[in-house]
Image (cartoon, rainbow, N blue to C red; front, top):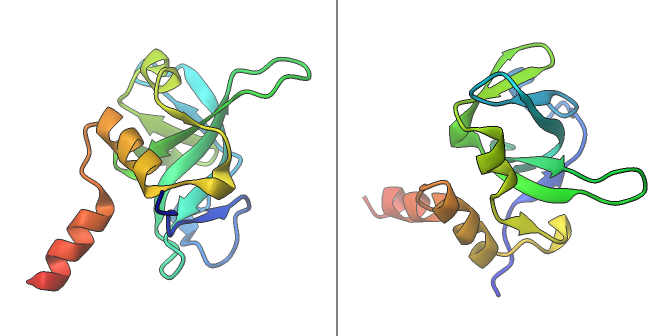
Length: 131
C-alpha cells in the first residue's frame, strides 16, 4: 500500500485560501438536505489546495460515525457556513469509507475517486509534467 501524500487539516489555518477555510461548515446535497459537518480537509502539503472534505456521517451518542472523503470537484462554497453539492445525501452516505484518516493510501483514494467517477489527481500531475 502506497501512502497518500495528502495532509489532514482540521482547522481553518491561514495557509488555506479564504475560500477554502470551510472546516466546521455544513455540506448540503442536491435537495438542500444537510449531509454532515465538515470535520477537516485533505490538502496538498505544499500548496494547501484541498482535494477532499472529511465528513463524519452517522453515529449516535457514544458511537463513532463513518468517515467519508468527498472530492473537491463535487462541491462549492456558497456562503458562510454552507457548502453545496449536486450529489444526493444517500449517495454520499454509501460512498467508500476510511477507518483512519492518518493511514490513507493511494489505493483507497483510487477507490473513492472511482466511486465518484473521477480520475486520480496524481495521474493529471504526471501528464502535465511530461508535456
